[in-house]
Image 1 (cartoon, one colour):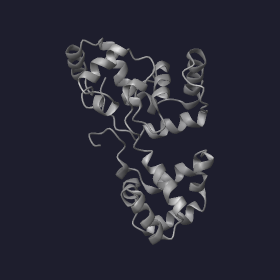
Image 2: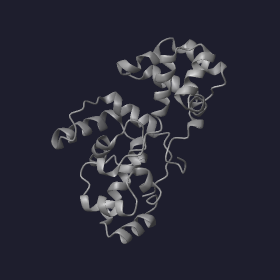
Image 3: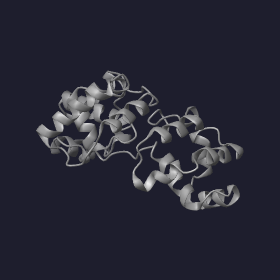
Length: 226
């Protein structure tokens, strides 16, 4: 998908990606990404990989990933996890019905127009005038349109799924721009307070998760204007 929905992976250097992996508290299933990281990233560089886009292209399909593993000598299980990690920087569009607190009537009206997920909505809500037009066409409350716009904006950030986006929204750190300028410690405390009050999720998240979201948000294009 183009049109500024995602991070420009060509502008995400391989060294920056490597440093993020080093600093991240990875899940057990992803800890292999830290194994022999210096040597393995030197091999990636020797194969002409300069940024995440190069890596994405080289590992585009499971077949290509296997071929790359064979040519580079890197373990297949490592390459497959690496491929999954790179793909996570391009989060799949969220079905609008997955966001907590969105009225069924709103979803129905948008669905009637073929607008079912954040990718569909993103194309037509980037400016104030576009949102006013959509509200007029659908008879949806303009405030509801703005709410969905902000949820769409936040969901473009890696690791921010529909429930997490809703918690961010309620915190007032409700756009990519605000998130990129947030203080992790302060925001984390606020998110915890909101989730304890409204019980959006039983899932556990920690301050370092919020910090990583902030870091990644700085790379997400400022494509929605408020």
